[in-house]
Length: 512
Image 1 (tube, rainbow, N blue to C red):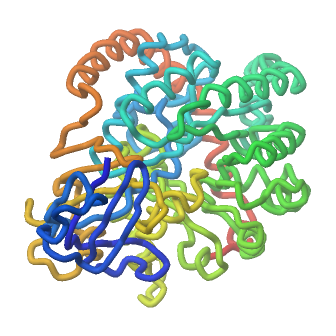
Image 2 (tube, rainbow, N blue to C red; image 1 turned 45 degrees about the vertical axis):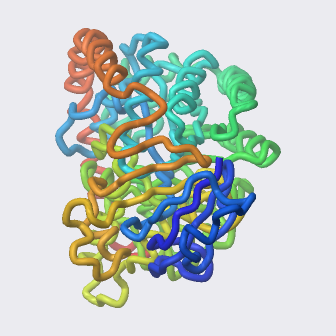
Image 3 (spheres, helix red, strand yellow; image 1 turned 60 degrees about the vertical axis):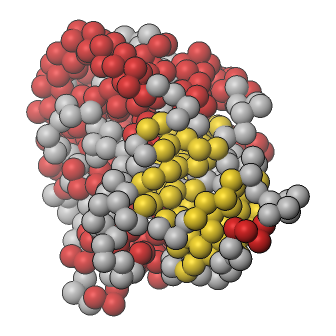
């Protein structure tokens, strides 16, 4: 199948144009972009041409961009969207990721939950995502098979993780021995199996999950030791080696909160977490680091030298009060920065256009020198090109150029008011567009969304089925999870307050 859009307005995010709009003809054949040329001769000139595309579209009224890439999200959180006021991560987690009292989801509910993530993403112009799935109470080949099946059916491009944790939850909290009752400390530590057993099970799962992507070119697997403070060094080093050997992303959460920074100060004998990762040989160009808020200037140098990507999640960071990433400091240091929504319980949406606008606006508050504020070009680069790298697709997606995958979003410039009047399509895409102008979404050369409708699935029926199934599951589960959060909150609050008030923060060299 070949399609030619004539005289389209493009934001190509390619090396030549970046985010500067220009007029061009775009042709796709199969799953690839095959030509981006100066506006072509009238359609009549193609008559009798054996190589003429099967579909020729007058795209004068269309803006074509690369699909957005959501470089960090958690599909598990679809289930708990709207359950929490703004709370610190350490307290929010007690409800959104309770360590006890979680019954395994029926496999059909996992499929439906993931389908909701896919539908919301596609309708909002996201064509690829990195899903740090977060399955509770644990992952298995059968659970991730449902995640793959949903993404495959919807037609989106997805990198899905297997999450590894072998450190008890109490030992991931600063001041745990001082604030938690002895019986909670003991129960948590006794419940964690020996690290060797955890690793054997985890890497066995990774092998099985990886094999399930065979024959599915839009699906990839990523190794994901959850965060340095949540895993032993042995698991972390083994995970890094396996990810490199398999050519996969190594995904980590990194310094999302001050509490994590406080914990690191005691755990790593005066070194920062990033210095520790560097000494272990974990950092590299295949490494994706979610958040990266509390980084020192030295950390930035190490990350930049390694070629790793930091994924900025501004809306999640705002809801959880985690802090503000040092946008200009990371860029000045040469760190690649991508964008993510984070999960649907900490954001609470999968809409990347919301993240794009928040990124462009948030960092005007961190420095009065407006020359340091994010540019539209930087923000769109983070949402496309850098996101593609973070999700493990390299330069296959993220820009419009011959040879790239045909992952495209087509906006109708005459629908609604976002592009009226049309002064600068890039500026208006970032600050004015909310997704309502999206006419079509293409992934891998296939039309997956047209005029607000997913073309490969019956979204209405799937959403209705999810509402019913989720309601049944949550009617029993949510009260139990809320009770656990209420029981634990006073202790975790004390640790959180101590961490945020710890001596040394005001003197600690950081990128701000």
